[in-house]
Image (cartoon, rainbow, N blue to C red; front, side, top):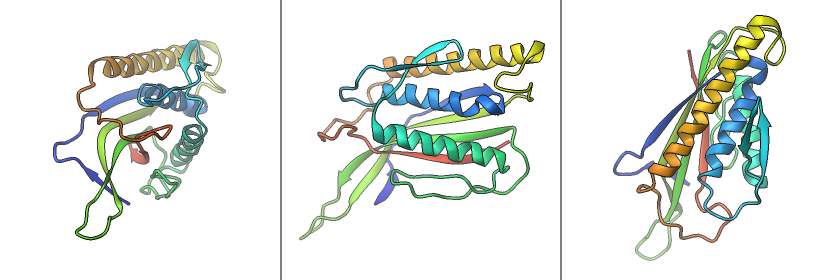
Length: 206
């Protein structure tokens, strides 16, 4: 299935997370669930989860949960391997490796939302074409380790405060976009649980 960018570049929204390594996956999952909560336009069973001292929405959809688990797992492997493999992309689980290198202090995860269109042929229907209509780029910056999840002592308390602040700011940015940026959202023409396919790419390092 082809994936293309629309004739006019789709809006791209940038988010930043500051985290230590042990907490990286939890924060990334929390932010992705928040984005999906505002971009799944069908009925969802209300659910929340607590991350640090924040209570955030949780998308209780088996397919989305599974993809988030898989992609965030690939992301932390990408961090641990210094960008060697462990990356991934796809709506259907197609994997792709990352670039080589040493340890990462920054890395990005990109989320594309897609609109599925049926291509027309002269005599037969052609394969569906997917066009990107919105992109989210999450840049994760790693803090020096303070030991454990959030660590202990002054360094651990400082890390925890920075992580909570960055997550809260990122979540508020998502809410702001969801409330103010609506004109580019395609019409819903499918009765599927999630009418818009999506793609998550792991890669990019600092």
